[in-house]
Image 1 (cartoon, one colour):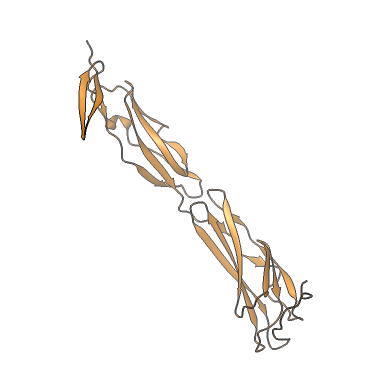
Image 2 (tube, one colour):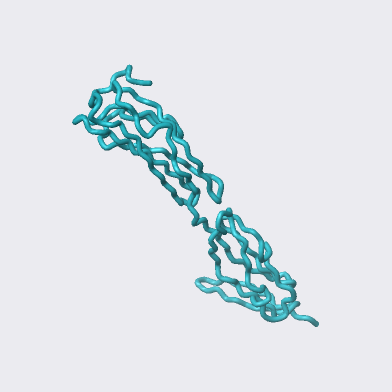
Length: 217
């Protein structure tokens, strides 16, 4: 007669006793692999992962042992439960985590103009052009503006491809410099940033004046 070892847990106050009974296919045990962390393949939203020979995890009369999903499968970024199962039905599992360590790819930034002629306190439109991509697909883009002499209403961010900048020089007549930064982040928190500047040349125009409601263009 073929024997099988079945395991039952008997619970008593503050004690757990592991009892083993005989009843069918005997002598098979599986070792649980350690959890795995693997980086996504370059430029891909996941990785092809090869596992060690499943037979090495078995001892005794287990028959064929296999992984589900199979070794060599493509796994997307995130966590996956991998089952190791013997032919006699015994199974164990481990967790495979695919991480995304690759930041978004952001092209050089081009503007419709890097220099604005000083004017009568007007807000001038400046278009912002760039391309962004990521191995995981989804990217969040944020545009920010700062100046070497910031005042309320000096700029307006219309959207991620258009800003409006005030065309006045500094109070002392010096050049006003705006820095436009594009920041792109993916779902894993990887960030890429690029910056460029727009200048309102000094020494040839009106210095800063308080903006009025008619100063929009």
